Length: 281
Ligand SMILES: O=C(O)CCC(=O)C(=O)O
Image 1 (cartoon, rainbow, N blue to C red):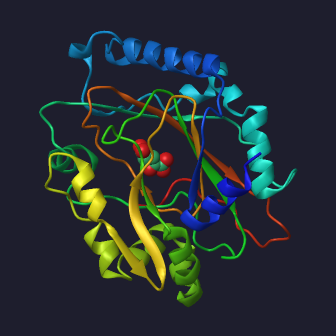
Image 2: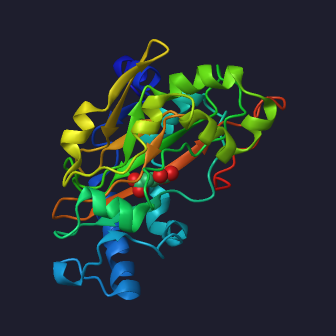
């Protein structure tokens, strides 16, 4: 269950943090399973940073099918989802906890990571939910769970606070054709205001914080700002389905271990189209 303040934050800022939402033993088990896979598949050892491969880890996307990850859907998490979407009004996911892991590198700056690893020249702001759902209705909720402590600059997911409210207005003026395709709608959104264009450019600074502190604006009377999901192991962020977010480089010394889970609201008499999780980009 979320507090009134957390609900207010969720709807105003587009995200709220539930500290200590996951049991410590569960997080320890999940993290141990990830490390076992990293060792088996990539030769990366938990206590030997010389074996770590910098950047986002690929090839562990199947882990969430394993039993260690199922308890991510714990009673506390379920009760918070019930609170936001309504009990019995959301679809039980087939798996829980998609892994997000990014490793540090001393040599790579924020800028070079973006250019070399994440994307050619841009920060790819996106949502994981389509844009053709009724703007007044919450079509789902996305969660980001921390499986290790996460300091600023350490690869935590970047979000654009307030962007869900901009999107709620944006979709009202768009054609059915534009909204039908996630990529088309996303690009139309990012081209709809100069600020979105400016925060999509690669960043030529060694660390993200100075850049991030300046990235704020007011779009159609809605305050927007770039923020980073940080916190302690076991914390869970609940985010609005239309909160823009993006991967970020890890400029710290410790690996970023998180997992995400998308929950979709059950369709109410054809109003909500099935959620496309994979954007057609
Ligand atoms: O790795 C990240 O932090 C980004 C995650 C993301 O973009 C997503 O789950 O859609």
